[in-house]
Amino acid sequence: MITMKEQRNENNKNDLTGLLIDEESDRNIRARLWYIWRLLWRDKSGLIGLIVFLVIIFSAIFAPMLAPHDPLKIDLHASRQPPIWTEAGNPEHILGTDNLGRDLFSRIIYGSRVSIMVGFLGVSIAFSLGMMIGLFAGFKGGRTDNLIMTVTNMILALPYLVFVVFIAAVLGRSLLNVVLIFGLTNIPIFVRVTRGEVLRLREEGYIEAAISIGQKTPAIIFKHIMPNLIGPLITLATFEMSAMIFYEAGLGFLGLSVPPTVPSWGNMLAEGRQFLTVFPWMSIYPGLAIVITGFSMNLFGDWLRDVLDPRMRRMKK
Image (cartoon, rainbow, N blue to C red; front, side, top):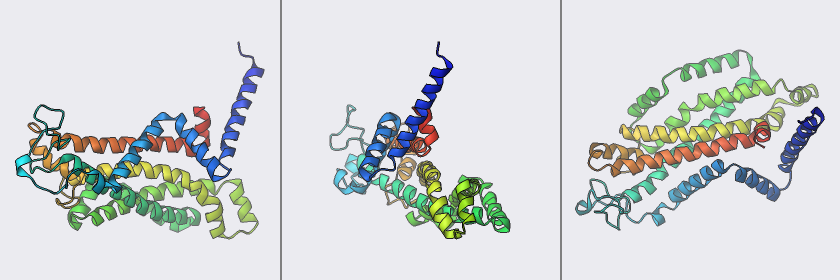
């Protein structure tokens, strides 16, 4: 039997441990990195997600050195070769070739560039613009807030995929167009989250104290509100980046993403679907690349959410 006194001591010990963990983040850079590594090591799923995602980023950056073949080189004599571990596999093509004899492994490596660029640049646009608009709406309030949120809710009410497909069909196939489409259409999500956090933070005691001593609005926003917004928005950005990679692949499958001459996972899925029953590797491996990338980012985003929320850290101890 655990007495009430022992339970109280245990709770105090857990609270003190949580405070000590939080205080470690206020030390120098080396201590902060070690602190982050311990939190990451404690959550193996987040560590796996981060490692896989870093490998994908590394392959995207150094694609010319890692890819064994030119992803655009056509060799009809080597077309439709199966992966190396099958009976008819060719050691020169690890994952086989497509219907034009192009090496699938090389095309998957180069295709990671499109996915990473669309996800990172699209999230950067939505993050920066959405945060500024949400800050302005939440702190200003009144009619300005009502107008901004009315427009935001109208955009969010639209079927997202249909909305994106319509814009992509109008603008045409281009990497820049895809980045702008996802960046601009995801602004309302960041606006809503930022505005909600600002409304909550405005009621905190330290914000009211800053207002009462006469601090100007820019100082309150940049010194007190924005530091508390970064955590939730970064977590949201990781999940939105994963979603953008899936949506970009969907546009590529529909023929509305980058041009056919640019290797991308969505284009590879579209090209291999007509051979799915006889040469399934043409679609299976690009599809696995999409799933693994999105899954790794979701694992890392879940860990990041727990780390940036001290209450979640203490619950997981």
